[in-house]
Length: 249
Image (cartoon, rainbow, N blue to C red; front, side, top):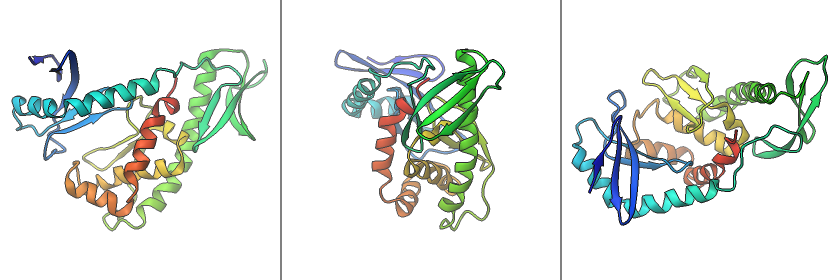
């Protein structure tokens, strides 16, 4: 039995399990078919054209229930051991795929700021305040992201014939997405993406730049993605596996 929820929330039965998913219908970016995604945190999202009957969406989810269940279980297993940050010296901080150690230095006369020094991300604060330490690290990630994204966008976009000028970019911390492309062509990028290796950053940038030509996840979109990054599936899988570490708060 399927039950219908509110705000696009739906469920289908799979044995003794209930598969919950969010249904998204985007009129500004037409999805040519029902597309099912299992997010790194185990949430299930389904995109469908506005004209697709709900019964057809539910049928598509039921058809892939086994695949969805397996991927949800794998996602939950990956994040089970990930603990929230305490923002104390010794914790791991990732940048461009490498692991650094957090070093908190309390100096009453210092301004709150974070800097990369050797094998450490050093955060100076006037007092040991978790919110201030977190804010300093976020500001550091935003600064590094602005520089890294600007550099890599030039490199990644160079062979793309449909990109005649670089799109505008805004930075926004997100817990479930690395990036998005608006119908007007503006990219929104997650500053925490700079925690990932450069190949993962390039993959996300290319993915969003391909949306400038194909505003959907059609076959043509994936063909363009594969043409310019044949190994994208391996890179995406690795990024998904590490997402909870890079996005740990």
